[in-house]
Every structure is written in C-alpha cells, then in structure tokens.
Image (cartoon, rainbow, N blue to C red; front, side, top):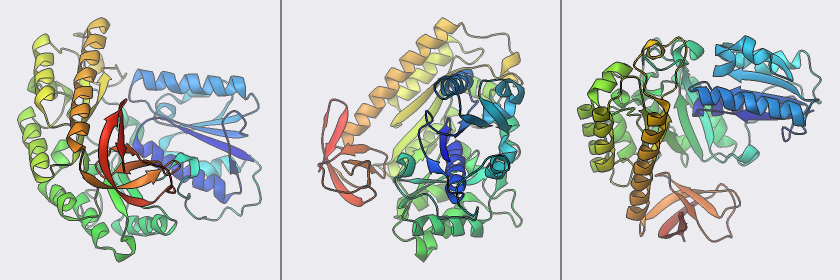
Length: 416
C-alpha cells in the first residue's frame, strides 16, 4: 500500500501530518507521490479563501491524474465545510480536526495495509518526505477573539500536552536522529493555561533546556502572539544555547485603530517596544511577522501608519495576507470593505517593503559565523537565525556545522 500526505497551512498542520505519516509507516505502508499512491491524505488550511481554493484544486488534480486514489481530507477546511469537501471527486472520507488523531484507525478499518502490526513505530527519520527538522505540536486550539479569524471554530478550545508528555516525545524524536525540533501550537503562547496544575510556555521551555537527554538538540519556537512573548522567554532564547535566535511575532497592523477593530489585545507602541527589546537583547535574531492589508475600514491613513512603521522596523521578514472574508467572523459582517484593487495594491507595496527588510538583514549578516543544520544533499544550511546558506558540497544531510556568511549572489547567501 502506497500513501501520500499533502499539507497546507501552518506548522500545526505540518506536525499533524508527521503523526499521520508515522501511523502509515507503522502499518507497513510506503510513501509515494500522490500521482501513484493508493491513499492520499490532504491536510487542509482555511485561514483564507485562497487556502480553501488551493485545497479544492489539489484534490481535483489528484482525482484527475490518479483516479484510483482514495482521498481522505482533514484539517481546517474539512472541519469548516465537510459537506462541500465530501462532494469533491475521489474523496472517500472527511476527517475533522478533532478526529485527526484517530485518522489512521479510521482509514485502516476499511483499507488493506501491509504487514505492519499497527504498533507505535519509530518516528520519521530525518530526510523522510524532505524533512530535516521535526515539528512537534505541544498545544492546539485558541480562545482569542480576533474578529477576522475562523480558526477558533475549526480548532476548538485551547488544549495543551502535559510537560512530561512533551519531554518524552522530544526525547523520542531526538533519539531517532532529529537535531532540530520546532515547537508549535495554534496559540502556542497559551501553552499550559488549561493544565492542572496550571503551567506556562516558559515552564516548558525551561524544562526542555534542563533535560540532559536533549543535549545537542536545537528548539525553534514557532509563532508567538506579541502579548505572550514575555521577557523570561526572550531571556531563555538569549541565554540558553538550545533555542534558535528566531522569533515570529504577528503584528497584523500598525494602526491602533485597525488593531482594535481586529480584536488584537495590544497597541503598536507595545509591539514596537517588544521587537526593539528583542533586537537589543539578541542583535542577530531573525524577527518575522504577519501583516493583514485591506481589513474592512482600513483608510489611507491607516495604511500609511503600517507602511511607515514597517519601513523603519527591525523585522527581518513579513508574511502579507490580503484580507479575506471568513463567513461567521465579526469582520465578515462589516460593510466598509476595501475594494479589491486597492487591497491588491497595498499588499504589493507591503511585500516590497518586506523584501527590503529581508535584503537588509541578510546583508547585515555577511561576515558573521553561525551554527546551522545541513539540509537536502548537505550543500544547504539553515542557521539558527533562519537564514538559508549555500555551502560547498561534501557534507551529509542533518549535520551541525559552523558556517561563515561570505556573500550574496542572485538572491542566494553563500557561505563556507
């Protein structure tokens, strides 16, 4: 039996897909391309309308190219619009997010697998499915009230894994050979608030740093909401060598009027002070962000505030999202929508600003030396501060190296 897993969206989905792949392998299934697989799992995203569309297009393409494939669809789009997804060609089962942990059991009740006994096997080895780092989900769900976001509906209330369980899983992954582990969650900064006794992300990070069996493993902290990036976390990243100097702190907008309308619980003044403190504390850190342009009611003055802040900010890369209506959200009911042509033009301008920030950060790092992990055939290194550097061949994948950034050529950093 050949399987294929196609993943859209966030790191949480990536982590979920890794678990699905482990389940297939434990049952004796063999990974293959979607064009030849017997079973294809499509793990969908629904953060924007374009994410829904991309999933539909992919499912239709698979059904057209591989009409014998049995397609199982899961993720946020499948949770939000199960009937719509079920009608797509080739789809034999729709599995909502809450049932995703049982996806393999659901599939194996009706499909014949290989000779695996279904027991829990070893984690995926580095390099399988092109992955060198392991994405570990420690939390899911969200209770925030952002007016544009449908994810609390598709992911449910916050749920955290117990610290001891996270430590056990991290040790298992490290023993399998993974040297970098990305910690992720739908609302990662809320980790532990639902546990009894109550805990926190800071507590989890401290325990990970103290575990002797995890020596040599680099932990990369995924997206943190600005209000959750407390000084203790910045101090841990700055002082403990096991954390990547990499932050992703979604801003969404730099106009306080827009932040309030979006339901974001901070001001631009708070955000500015936060990222300035990170840059001061860890000068070589990468600091990424998410930006929404064209939110209902966004005026030219609001956009000017956003453009002005970003141009002078210490951010190193931005992901730009043109506003997309999500039915059922408060923002979708607003009537003061920004015309599409204006939204597209504003998105283009912010992407250009983001590219300038990235170029400036990369240039500032030329001449510096960073620890990094080899990817692909060993000729590509990703550094702790999230730079991809091309190096001479001669190494294997998944090796720690110290790389000096020498120059940039045709948009690619070169090192040695």
